[in-house]
Amino acid sequence: MTERNPMPVCTPEAAGVPSGAIERYIQRLTDARLLMHDVLIARNGALICEAYWKPIDESFRHREYSCSKSFVSVAVGLLIEWGRLHMEDRCVDFFADVAPADVHPWLKEMTIRDCLRMATCYEAGSSYKPTDPDWARTFFTAEVTHKPGQVYAYCTTATTMLCMIIQKACGQEFMSVLRPVFDEIGVSRDAFCVETPCGHEWGGSGVCLTAREFLKFADLCTHYGAYHGKQLLPEVYMREATTKQIDNGAFHAHADEDEGYGYQFWPMRNGGFAMHGMGGQFALCLPDKSLTLITNAYDELNAHALCTVFDAFWEEIDPNLSSAPLPEEPAAHAQLTARTNCLSVPTPPGEPHSATEAKISGRTYEMAENRLGVKTLRFDFTEDGGTLTYENASGVHVLPFGAGHYHRGPFPETEYYGRRIGTPCHRGYDSLTAVAWRLPNELMLYTQIIDIHLANLRIAFTFEGDSVTLNARKHAEWFLTDYEGFATGTAR
Image 1 (cartoon, helix red, strand yellow):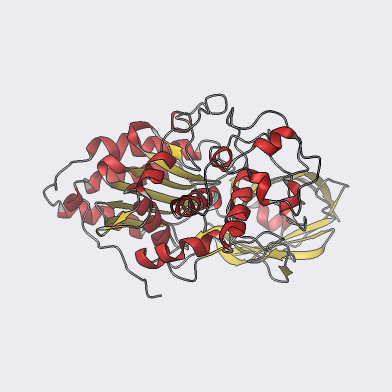
Image 2: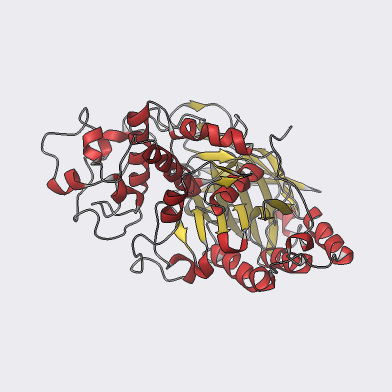
């Protein structure tokens, strides 16, 4: 793939960053067994570190989840700069075609500024689903709980409303509003945003970019829209958007989530700001140090993952930044390069094989009634992995897995949501699956879905005599709904 307008590349030392500090940072992520996909760092407009956890590589177009909200904010800022929108515009005035006549007075007061600051009149927002035909109508069906503009409450509905307001104000979706900026900095026209059932771009969650494209956009924000002598984004708006506009102390305890909220950006400690996305999508922007860090991952089942990404940066890299170039360290840089070249998504810890395999391979287990709807399951083991065959409400499925390594292939789900949410096609999600024996009779299966929808699935199987008991846990937005719970079965 030919990259448009690639960032210049230099050694970390040339940018005032020790290679050893970056290596220690990546080592801490590795030691914590985080399900990382990539880490990229830019300083002074140059790429100084690029690391991918195989099989993810530079061509993978990654779902950015709630980092997408910051893209919507920038599009709103451009329309405000052009006079097409104003901060105090009332949201309801853009929805005369769908708003009921008896709109709650508090909902009538809600403005664009309120949506940007997550200061709506909703506690949790609308309960829209991929099956809802019109997400605009759901704005006016959710329970109104308080006056808007008063308090912070994270609410993706606010961003969805902003996306639709952008389209009504200028006749374009937010990604089209950003397209001239994307062209300037080198974001491919293959970049896209997952759509809602009603045909709008899902700006609260759906932007899909390569890691380099994400870094370019984040670095543009780090510099408040300045790029090679041009001002591509309104500087005044960007400075406001990335600083505290409302307090969020009632919701967050971690130091990096307790600095308030801007306009769809998160102020951070040490003078920075960030974009946050579910599962480990993250951009840290440090304007005073001209540094941008982006990560992509999906480790939502790990409650400590994001804290590890934050803390490791503040402890390993930030204290070692120099305002001037450092002497080159060829050995340290070579060690960093060697480290980044051998990264891969971690498989479940444990042994690749157990003597139990010979006892259970090929046996079919009849499952007692269970919440997952699993009727039967069977393992067939080989030297390098095997298959799990199971029957549930949707039929018989075969899931190949690797032992000590991942097997890559389609996950056996028949419904797949493509670019347009609600438009299924019959193919499986691209996925990685591996197993390991945690104890001689306890098998752990990991599945990582790496598609435009990301997911974690972990299933623990315990074999005892003629019985098997499983415990399945998943994190996936609106799918894998039948893959969570417990079940016990007996061999035929």
